[in-house]
Image (tube, rainbow, N blue to C red; front, side, top):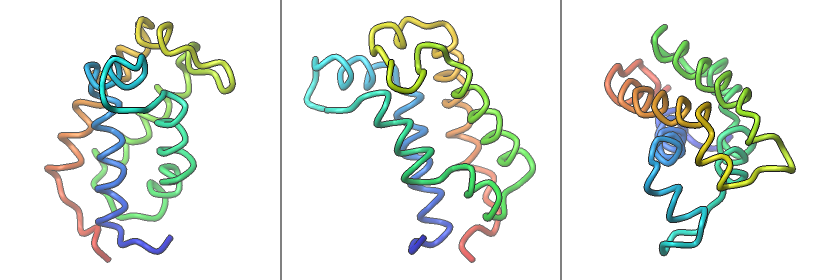
Length: 121
């Protein structure tokens, strides 16, 4: 990856911010706003493009940050409405498990912005 760890973290935080933002999802996933996005795009950005699992292994994080990211990954992987090749935006928006993911992402976003490790190396 040709970006610094700090930029990697900021890119991941950007996706986490979208995961935490119900209003964004309602606009972007349903075509009711100027944004264009989908749950599949968010998952691909986080897991494929930004390789969040590699990030956790390779970047120096505080224990709370590391645990927070690992918990988010686990929560996202257990949302039935977000199964690959069958994501239904309306079902996902209404899914209580997705609500848990969204609420957790809000807290993780704050955590990743506050407790800075020396992640610029």
